[in-house]
Image (cartoon, rainbow, N blue to C red; front, side, top):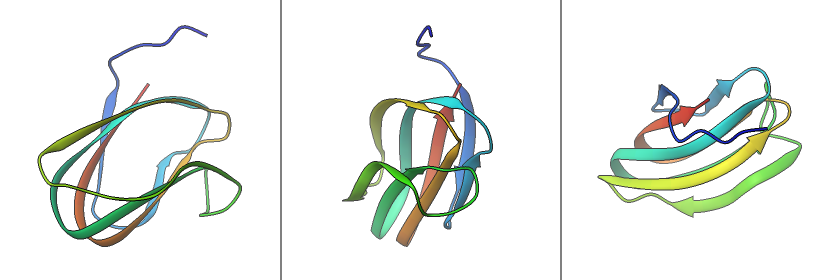
Length: 89
């Protein structure tokens, strides 16, 4: 599989599904955060299964490169308050 450094933006402000099928995660941009945290799972429907990235604190105006292959999809658990854009190919 060829890795691309461009992808479709998917914005989230609450826990939920980002991708419903296999995909490539390029990274995550946090536009704003108030005690925001993020945990990512390789799962198309729930916060369970393989953990892609364990819980970390988000800083506003920060891009986090996370080049990861997702076999099943992507589910994001957002804690606190955060405005996050995922870039998925």
